[in-house]
Length: 223
Image (cartoon, rainbow, N blue to C red):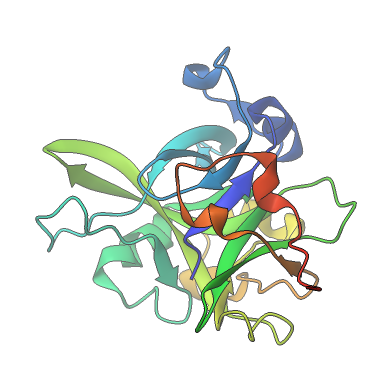
């Protein structure tokens, strides 16, 4: 699964990287790097509007129609079965998005030690996580909510966790965002990146109240 991630890229940089227009609601807004992005907050996403890419926001965590509790949020969707799931099938067909992420965290059991997982050192570009937008009614208000699609983890990461967020290769962004793209083809575009690196970090990341560059520093485990 993917339950926390990092985003240190400014929206203006993201708009350039993804060749997207910036939603007017985001223009001029103060940006602060987020080293501990957690569910239930608004996050930057790339969507397609009338054939053009737009960088906008959606709340992370889909509230399924069968749930009456605002705390029942689905933050991930399994790529292998997403087409068959009632909550996600329609969104996968017509409302696929990209979710920019600098890195993500995963917890290794049984001790639940947190690991920072990112592209290779020196890669300046954010990952393009595969996501879906679903309209949810939370506390009586309709909201654009989203979930991150996951796949089986690559061999170098499966000792940490058996799942990982799916990515979309740059060459396939257009097809992925196109609502006319066939769902079976879209599912074939889901990518489990094999070039990601991981290292252990401090358990301070376990608390959503902690948010600083110290969270992504490699933990010295030599003692």
